[in-house]
Length: 294
Image 1 (cartoon, rainbow, N blue to C red):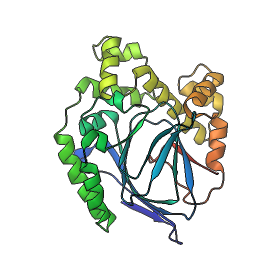
Image 2 (cartoon, helix red, strand yellow):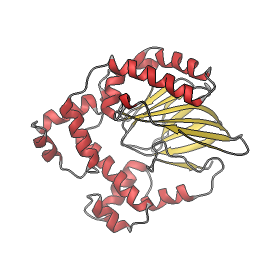
Image 3 (tube, rainbow, N blue to C red):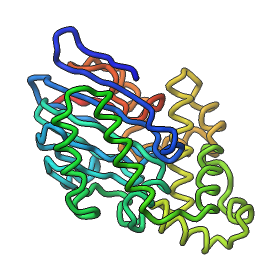
Image 4 (tube, helix red, strand yellow):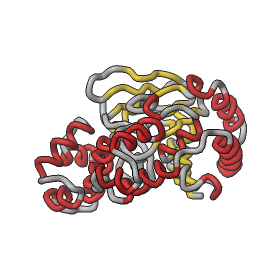
């Protein structure tokens, strides 16, 4: 377990891997406590994980579309965000305390027991999917002072709920892992052939157990690969080619469609000086977010 904290006490983050029995479906736990004294806005771009936010402090969090401004949810309850292909804005008053759980989409299918297209490109209160079990879990976690003990309680709850859920199709899991490992570059017709499915069968399985169509999921993964290369200092044309785009212009078009910004503008937003913790990404080792002013 890794803990990072501000000497002035305005923020604290801790990360831990879930119990081995939950892996590789459950990716990570990320505990946080913010007391910034000012509102905070965070631009969230598409990534390859489903996120559950356990709101221990019961302070309201608003999530809006970054392209239309429409409020998707405004709540102090636990939330779940499925796979998305569009950017969102997360906003709160500066006081927030909770745990983010990131999962592969097929693991979220097993945890919530709903067709994952119902969670795609949206954010829901967990009570709409699983009754009040996550709110009850938040109460227990909020009353437990040590992060390590909280994570043990979370391990036990998720193991119980996942074991009781529907098992994902092994070929769907294989297809998602294959697509993810390739960074979205394996063609969909090849992916279907490798699973001995038709493209239509593959699309149905992705709709049910992943949440985005295979081609859309592949675009998200290619954007993620290109962004990782750009963040590491690779030249844009080389990053575009490595991620499977025709050219830099193709990368720029897809990137703007999915993030509302050009790659250079998004990276400039991340590099800008902002109050609060410097680490803002909800998936360790990936670029997922940028803190905004105003």
